[in-house]
Picture 1 (cartoon, one colour):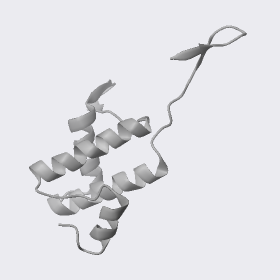
Picture 2 (cartoon, rainbow, N blue to C red; picture 1 turned 120 degrees about the vertical axis):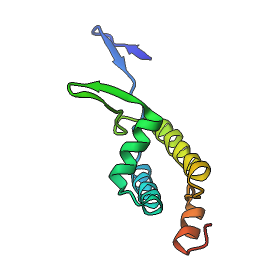
Picture 3 (cartoon, rainbow, N blue to C red; picture 1 turned 90 degrees about the vertical axis):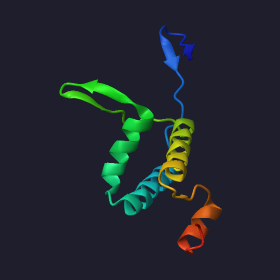
Length: 110
């Protein structure tokens, strides 16, 4: 949705992109999953992007959609999908709240 600009044209309202906290949490989640599966976090990153964000066409073929342009809401949904996948497919509970992160760091999250 945009706003009409008095001088002509359209002024688009930008939705806030993912936050730094979300980005840090995302890479931590990928590391946890990577440790569990024996993959590195970049491999997990690419697998999750393809699985949950789909693919875009590039000059050399389809590549997983980037996370860099996700809004905060989209990033939250994406990370929730990853957490659900980890729980159901990998039997791995990953921390998603500050309280769960504290429990995870204390070795209490199972």
